[in-house]
Image 1 (cartoon, one colour):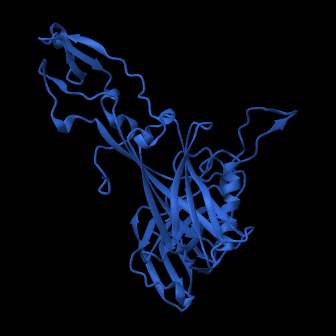
Image 2 (image 1 turned 180 degrees about the vertical axis):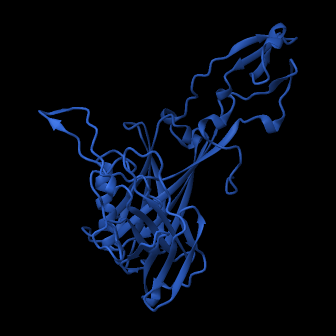
Image 3 (image 1 turned 30 degrees about the horizontal axis):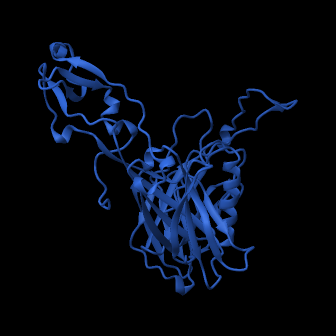
Length: 380
């Protein structure tokens, strides 16, 4: 499901530039246009499902990004079959019981009735079948000091021509120190294994718009399309990194939309930055053709491929170096002065223990870097 459309679309003015200098400027916000419907919808032929996310655009002065709940959302085929989508989460409507067939040449359109009675409808779309992903590869770059991950694909029939990719990254990493002890009632005792938050996994979904066209090429081949760049020293490749890539074929109209949105957002530095203008998709208000609707409804098959990258596969100049975590000493006589949340890494002194080494809690708890200690089911 394409999740790159987000409710954080803003209606803004432009920067005031005078004499080549950029002065601080607070744009005037049009509140009348700050509640536009945002639609992110995709029919997935591969798993016979449809997922539609509805939200509202906001102005710069707002602090919340409202989902559009309690709507009636349906998908209708050109032969009159209607599928009702159920709101599984707030603003997210889904059906897993569709009967789709790319070969039948049926077209589909989205219909939305919001709780305030407004009705919206998309143009009819065709389901585009994507060719398989040939490979997901990576290359190290000494000059860029990092690695780039690439997608490779082709269509011998030459019918695809327009491609889109999304991906999900998961990486395994550890805290800088392992905590073997803790303080209980003024006494240092071994820390139970289930309280050692040393190893974590973190997951992120792609946020950039990744599209490509082969229309100008003699063959329908995409070679080394860059998906993402991982900088030297990134925690993502400190132990083991995993990326699963999804590929979709687009119609010419869908490609044009995503390319236009890509140019707009990248000129500002990111997808969720303020938009200087509205990029209108293929969804319209049935009773008010002048109302802009943001987002796009699309569909087709989804191809998927994943790879693992291990830290020892990387050249030496790209290896992860732990952040600085200073340690201090805690003498045995001083233990009663320390609390139960003291981060103890190890003991020191031979043949008798003279004290313990301590550090900050962030240095013994991998969760401080945003991850969780639950190992993913697919992890080796």
